[in-house]
Amino acid sequence: MKIKYIFPIFFAALALMTSCNEEQSITLLDEIQVSSSYVSIPVAGGSTSITVTAKDSWTAEKVTTDKNKVEWLTISSASGNAGEATLTFTAPAAIDGRNAEVLIKSGGKTQRVNIIQGLSKISPAKVSEVNAGPDGKTFQVTGVCTSIVNTDYGNWYLKDNTGSLYIYGTLDAKGATRNFKSLNLEVGDEVTVEGPKSTYQGTAQLVNVMVIKINKSLVKVDSVKNASLPIEGGEFTAYLTCKGQGVSVDIPTDAQSWLAISSIKSAGTNTVVKFKAAPNSGGDRNTKLIFKTTDGKKEYTTETSLSQKGAIVKATIAEFLAAAVGDTQYRLSGIITKIDNNTDGRLYIRDFSGETYVYKIQDFATKGLKVSDIITIVGKRAAYNGVAQVGGAVLESVIPVTSVTIAEFLTKADDPNKYYMVSGNITNIATGNYGNLDISDGTNTLYVYGCYPGYGATGTARQGLITSKGIKVGDKLTVIGPKGSYNSVPQVNGGLYFSHESSN
Figure 1 (cartoon, one colour):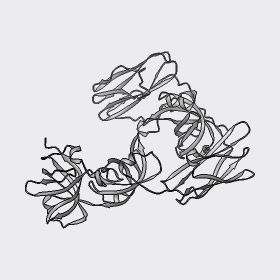
Figure 2: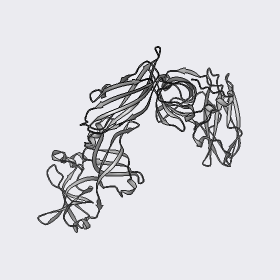
Figure 3: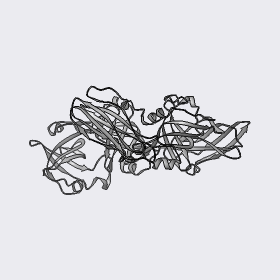
Figure 4: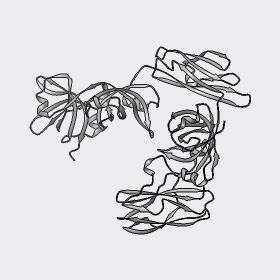
């Protein structure tokens, strides 16, 4: 099956220059105007000028990325004053077509000018070559559709024998956006696409691609049964349509210890494959199953996913940070040290072993949580730009912490289940490793029986905080803990370190 697009040459060039981002639309602004939003420079090299009219001073800058510094383009001036001015763009001869974008800013507004030098040559390439190639260059690449993320804009993954590539936006047969379903592209199909390469947060992608050819797979997954299995294990079934010469199945190596094929039955083009999963004594786990067939000359594949619930792993934050990114569920407890977003629950929690970022807590806005509260959450080990975080977090429990003065703390009833946050200047540090000390507000003194590194510390993990933090008499210390008494003298029982300010 072939799907081809025919565009006028100039329209195609402009399409490659245009992003789906609405902010890149050219608008007529009062503050800053340009005589042309598109500038064409001959392939042989040369200069082209436009007129800039501004009500205030202005600046001009090239849009660059790590892989496309746009060093070939020279701008006659990087800034100008109010009024009318001529801005000239110059480039040497080009072997291949290239493009750039220039931002002209004034009065808080931005005009975008697209620079085109020749028409970019379409380069057939492997995925690895696209990933290593410069931003802005148009590539033609062929691979198998392995996953479809968005069926409106057409965001999906293409894979060949050199790697995987994200496709951000797919045009339909008439060059329109948001009509991906009309292509009838399915997981397992072999696809040839053309589009400009860009990089988003360090990841390569092709943007608003044109589909040149679709080679429909001879095998596809029609439906599955029990795609999410319980801890106890059970049977997973995949229903396939196969127009090739039989079906073979690949189970990844890391899943072969707990998943096996129990039967494969075929009738005409219909094939049913059943799998048996063993009970799961660990954390959540999942795998991708690949089904293959052939027409005698070429291999065709499709795939589906299977997940199995597991036990929740109780872990310290240090253990969580050391774990691999995956679907295993971890139970973490700690003190909220910072909240980045009060609506969806982007925050930091810390226990005695370390601190981690939590990317959203389900229904956070209704929980009434605040900095200093002690929470227990369940979530997955995730990462963003290589930095660890908790993903898909669910709040299990909370110990509310009330902020009080020393005078207020002294009036509270002894209760091991009520926690308070209290601050004062250290007036005395007792000998020993547990951090027994006195704090004062200048009038009242409070004994802190133990200043531990954080929530969850037991045994020797409670020791050494004072030395490791360099805490000394005179410093302002903030601790969290319940009200208790010893020989009728009020104290903080087992204080949890929150912060301190040096007196120096």
